[in-house]
Image (cartoon, rainbow, N blue to C red; front, side, top):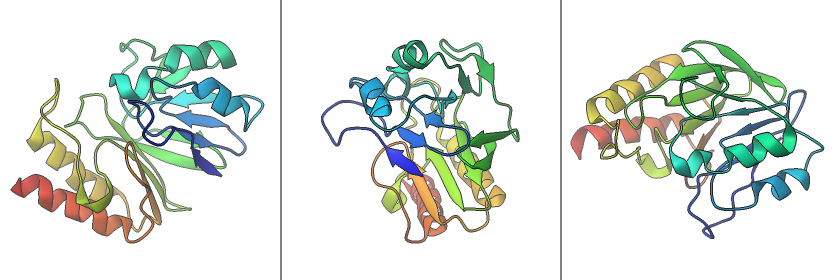
Length: 191
């Protein structure tokens, strides 16, 4: 089961996904709300935190979660503050009951990862792409439009037919997630 714990519009935060199952994982702890209480209301504990990237809206609650649950955080770059273990491009990580392949997808931020589980068709896209063909900002530090487009291309090459796309902001996409990613690629190339 995957639940978004972020409050709708009450704080400057990313989506925060609790993935339940054999290995209970929080994907991006978010910012500016009491995520610890939200987690405690649903599960007895966490096994790990996985970060799509380290922008403040995705990691502001990281230290509170690590302290409350005694867990480590995993992300692309272990030299980033709060990241205890590196996930390399192509590594396999378990979240819930499924194995996800980690795809390094810079362009929005240098340490950006997407996570894809082929069997259930679940994609965590972070801030690479969003519903309705949206794509991550490239005007922030470490942002680069050409790298972002290359990352979207790489993502499309690496996945087959996702059934659901969970983005870092906005709603999940269940109606043609691959088409949403293709639309984001077109928009990123033309805007």
